[in-house]
Length: 88
Image 1 (tube, rainbow, N blue to C red):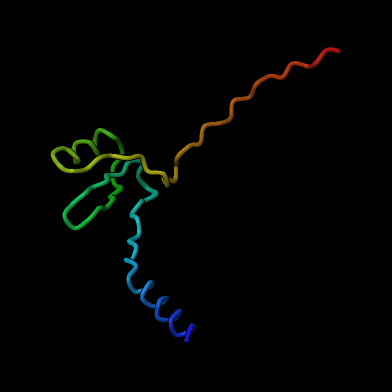
Image 2: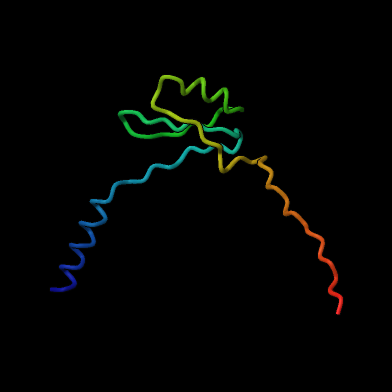
């Protein structure tokens, strides 16, 4: 009886969970437009500058974000400090 109740609870939980939509981050462009519409939210990456994206977002419920998956993104190098030798 417990197994049947557990199986029903598991099926109900899985069927009630909403399906997740995949993000549309394109690794080809450094700037993305995050748009909120009646149908939901979506992200379109196709802008080469923040100014270009801002013009597209003007007058809409949208904002520009930097693409975290940009393929040619350069990670800043660590700053190297000189270590002075200890004198005893």
